[in-house]
Image (cartoon, rainbow, N blue to C red; front, side):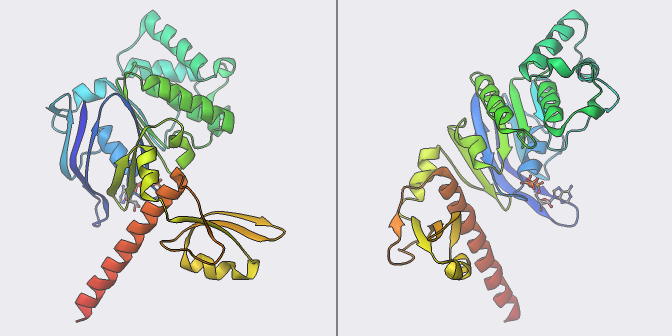
Length: 304
Ligand SMILES: Nc1ncnc2c1ncn2[C@@H]1O[C@H](COP(=O)(O)OP(=O)(O)OP(=O)(O)O)[C@@H](O)[C@H]1O
C-alpha cells in the first residue's frame, strides 16, 4: 500500500536525520520506536508528504507519492508532534474549519464531527474555546482532526504525549480498531505505547532502521543478555558506568537492578527472560556503541 524506498533526509547544515530507510506498510499497525532525535518525526513528515525527502522515494498504491503527493494526501490522516490550534475557536468550530479545508462540509461533515468528538471524549467541552483546553484535551482534538476524512493511512507522531493513563489506553484501543483495515504508523519513544497494540515494530536510531519484527522476535534477540541483581548503593555508579540498566528499584537491602550484559555481570546475578523494553534498550545501546567506535576509528584515521 505504502512503500518507503531508501529514504534520506539531510537538513541544511548537513544534519543527517534519516539515512536510507526502507519500509513497506499495509493494513495494520506499525509501531515506530526510537529515542529522541532518532529521526522519527522527520520520517513521519516525509510519509505525510509535508517534507520532500532529500533522497529515496515514497510510493502509494504503486505510484510515486513524492512527485504526485495528492492521492496519498486525500487518504491520509496526520497528527504531527507539534499540533497547533486556533485558541479562540471551539473544538466543533475548529474541526468544521479543517473539514472545509479538506473539502468536507454540510450535514455529513457535521455528523462526522459529532461522531469524532464523542469518540475522543470531548462532547462535554465543545462549547469552550480551545485556549481553555488542557494539553491532553488538545491532543484529543488533534486525534479527531486526523480522522476527519476517514483516512486509509493514519500517521500519528508521539500521539499519547500529555494524555493521562486512562486516555492513553483509550487512544491505543482506538488506533488498534482503526488498524484493522487501515495502515497506521505510530511513532513513540515509549515502549508501552506500542507493545500492547503493535504486532509489528520498527526500531529507529541515529536515522537508521535497526530492526523490524514482532515483539517476540525482538525479545528473542536479547535472550541470555538480561540479568537481575541487587547491589549496594555505593556500587551503583560503577555498575551504571559498565552496563545499560533497564530498571532500578531502591529497597532496604540495596538497589534491585535489571541490566544488559553479554556475560553474568556479577556473582549472584540471575538471567531473566527479556521483555520489549530490554530488547529495545539492547538494540539502541548496541547501535550507539557501534557509532561511537566508528567515529573513534575515523578520528584515528584522520590523526594518522
Ligand atoms: N528542520 C530541521 N532542521 C535541522 N535539523 C533538524 C530539523 N528537524 C530535525 N532536525 C534534527 O534531525 C534529527 C532527527 O530529529 P527528529 O525530530 O526527526 O527526531 P525524533 O526521533 O522525532 O526525535 P524527538 O522524539 O525528540 O522529536 C535531530 O538531530 C534533530 O535535531
